[in-house]
Length: 249
Image (tube, rainbow, N blue to C red):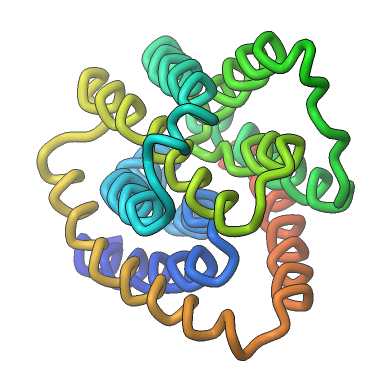
């Protein structure tokens, strides 16, 4: 695939992923990676979404309520998550494409499973600090390996009983908190070079266009039907990735 072909394909993918993110508040890394790996290797797919993932979530976070309140409530989780993502991405820098494809496929299927649970038990107040640290560390391991930690993150926010607006803003914070160390680790490991980051920056335009479209659709479409279709897509793409990993690409 030529660079032009890759960018046309990636622009279409980020337009769709941005639309989904604007509609339900998350899903950009997961959808992007699942589709981009149909046309390129996992490392390049992750490199291409680094800038859209970081900046779209900083924007989503900044558009919500007071940041001080958000940081007091979710700052500890964000800090542990970021450290875990960065360290995992660095120590897994030599992992092969088959492992990354298999792990990403498993995360897509996990996301579908977690969504089917619907109601997550609330965190017990007496042990909330310890549970947060463990949960954030494990979420970061998933994120550092696959760049997709939306499933366990959404499950955590549901367990905290975050209201809808707070859920969306906190999702922006927690994905941004992992995106920056992921980017730094990819640059340090040589997976993301200036050319790759430049291509990633160009994908900001379709990402934000999709985000704006998704926000408009949110008021016109049935969110439950949309989410069911998205979960079905995750199941199909996750199974395909695991199959490709098992047979060698």
